[in-house]
Length: 434
Image (tube, rainbow, N blue to C red; front, side):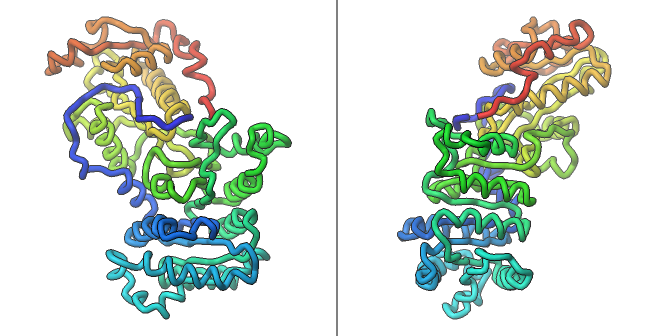
């Protein structure tokens, strides 16, 4: 799965939504608030001022956001551990606590107090006793951030980070490696992998056949973290750390433990997040511009697709109230996040809506769009193109005449040819996997 601009089926609109109304970074920061992230990066990737600033910039954002941050670095030899720790304290410390973070942590202006944040964690190579975890919490609870150095070989840092992440049940584990995310033999970036895909890759000889044998220890650590209770692991290069954490597109590979994708009706606690996502789609011109009242109606009849435990992958609405006399339902605001493009998310949303529509006794579903990709998508999913008079007349009440001239209508009859959509294996089969 390659990363491209989001190109998901929906209506179109060109009027811009002000950028300040929604940012991807704000969305992710909101999700991270009051949680703990563990970032593990090899010390040889933290050697230059640019390297340190890349990590410190992310740290400052997280600290201002009330996110606890645990950073692990390795020391290639035990005798170098203290030197590595001193280097990070002297060079990384001032970069993390400056500007906007200083008022939040005034006690860390003092270099002596700031040294409390930096610990030698040689115990991570052995059994993690409660006393070690208590020491880590003492620092995180007081200062919100801990930078630890583990005296271990370069190939062992991921395993050490996994043991700590599992013991603490952190919200997210981020492994920073120079190669970044997983890439297959063809050079295609694998943006997402679930536990089943990871198991297949770790089967005897499979990683080697895919040219990933040298990354087997990292992949094994990822699997152990997922099985140990960490719901999401990210693998990326340091230069892409900010994009990986704060954008939908990401810059590496996201691993999750849970089933590939779950589609559920939206609850009220989802509304604010989905509203911001719809605004993003409108700003991109991929979703039709709607008023606040219209968006609220979509939320009330909306569905969300979730990857893992907390990664919103796509949204869609099923409008039925305006078309009750026709016993019809309209597919609206179908939008999936760029990172999960190609993973079958839109098809899963549509399949769930079709199932519920049949249960409600609807006669047919319809969708209207001006986008060529959206037209092809609906046709793959069993919809047939129809004239505009074959959808409810209420659809066109007050509709913009210029836009209507460019709109194509698609319809899926539920009473006649009930298995039409199911006959499309590409749309109804298992989601495509990288």
